[in-house]
Image (cartoon, rainbow, N blue to C red):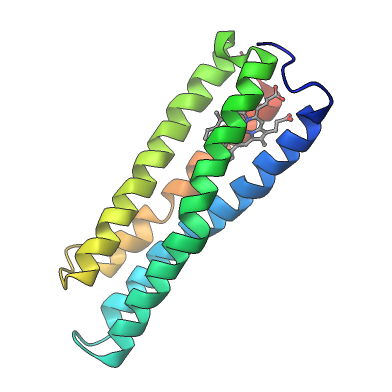
Length: 147
Ligand code: HEM
């Protein structure tokens, strides 16, 4: 499969990075929305607005981005033979953790929609550090390829 993308390789890589940016932006925004959502009165019009904003962020930005990042990333990996390289194994592990975090955020949005506010604002601000840390590790692995 090595070289399957041919001359399209750099375009696929550019697409990969464009959607990485969209995905990260969405992951940074969603817990902030949750914090403001939880500061609104239960059952208020403001709460309904936050539910709507969260729905749209998930549907228009986050869902398409995670799918495209994965598809283009896997195409790049097949093209370059990355599956046999050490840095890629760790990158894949961190990306899986990030995808799990994404899934957890989706499930928390559903809880909030059902009126269950189980996490404190402080906790939400704290978990908001996860995508930043994961992105820093992933970028170093993908660019420096230390092993
Ligand atoms: C979702 C699964 C992902 C897969 C399967 C994947 C796979 C890949 C592969 C195979 C490359 C080509 C590396 C090379 O040039 O040899 C690449 C490039 C890159 N990826 Fe990903 N990636 C994924 C997600 C991410 C995420 C979440 C980030 C950042 C937060 C990221 C950042 C980068 C960067 C910065 C490059 C450019 C490296 C370079 O050209 O030097 N990737 N990715």
